Length: 334
Image (cartoon, rainbow, N blue to C red):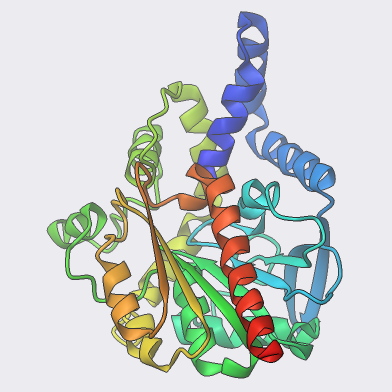
């Protein structure tokens, strides 16, 4: 999400001094309001509608476009501390005839958040399955896409509910035993302080460091804008900390690793070669355990693949499902 907001700042600023100053001043006074307007505008432009679904007393918030048709629906799961709208940059390049669903993960944005909830990978999978059932998405198998934390959940979901999934796309997923430690994992080990997590910034300086950690692309961002981004996140930091600690619990830390051999759906693995959050060596771990999986390593790309390479991400997802569908049609003709 934060890289998308940086792009918003650069676009709004343009080349004129007055718009830059006006936008910066507005962002500092009303950062949350401007961010909401930004996403409202792009949802409207791309034809995405905000909807809600209930499962018992639990509410899911999601955005959607189109209706189920001959081609599989796409369900997209975002990463840690992001939300459904992070996929808009990819949606922009996806065919309009596809049925798309992007849901706020448990506890995020418009989906129910409770201090009593368990946010381990397995519990998140149960919640996502409840969401799928609540909107009848699994009336026919769908294409499941997940990035980072969402990739972990997507992989475990595919293993536990194989009948729901026709294709699976994992984008730099969490939940593996990586042969090589990433910069982020090294920081965690060296710190030894569960309260000091670089993905949960509380100052402008920490916000800048998080953006550098997540992205290969480097932005020169004014400190005032970084502070605005932090101000939006700070009210949620207590939840992000609980979420992170639940994810890395002993019974959750390697959830995808423990389930990957059970994945039967045709699987696509996409990773940024310069990922500093989750090392690219995880791609080999997955591909060696999931027969026939396809691996795409993106050069000059970090962890935020969806934000850094949205056009490429969209193309890879569409080409993957199309090639498999064509293969299925040829088999039927034979």
